[in-house]
Image 1 (tube, helix red, strand yellow):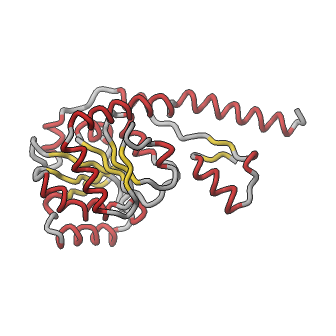
Image 2 (image 1 turned 90 degrees about the horizontal axis):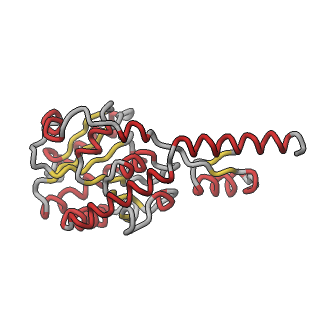
Image 3 (image 1 turned 30 degrees about the vertical axis):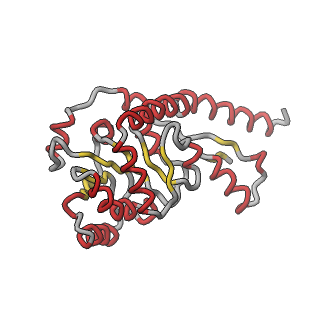
Length: 241
């Protein structure tokens, strides 16, 4: 068995009673070539397409719009964020398989008086450009297998505020290459976002460290080499080698 994170490896052992020594750990890689490519358009043009002002502070989330992703807590954090950073905009880029949940999120934003500051773009083909254009990446998931969108944001050099749950602490080292908050806590999420928006120097330092970490740990070639090693070891065991 191959697990995409240490967390998944542990779950497979505890819940499926699979022997740990038979579970290999292999993190999913990211498309480093896409992240290294030149942006197709500049920040101002991209923000204009999304209906945002040039001076917007863009808080980006990338991922499927579903309860698992915890976006509701980012919406609930917006009033506190806007009180300190009035130009903040929460932008969600990702498919919406559950239209009822999307409508609930919109209703929540409306009830909080932040509907004009929360934007649902749907599935996008220009996520790399969005990552480059954002000021901060927010990843409030309640649970994940690994969190590829988070890793891609880190590789793009963006400071990230993510939840301290499941495998995410394997990806983010709190205070070193990102910031971790408790899952399901809008207040703590707002505090962390505001703290990083208040301190551009720290935010930029976290972004640089995030890129260095993600690009070093989630390279496609290294993943392919490790997968080949796993296959070779399985074949060797099957042959009694």
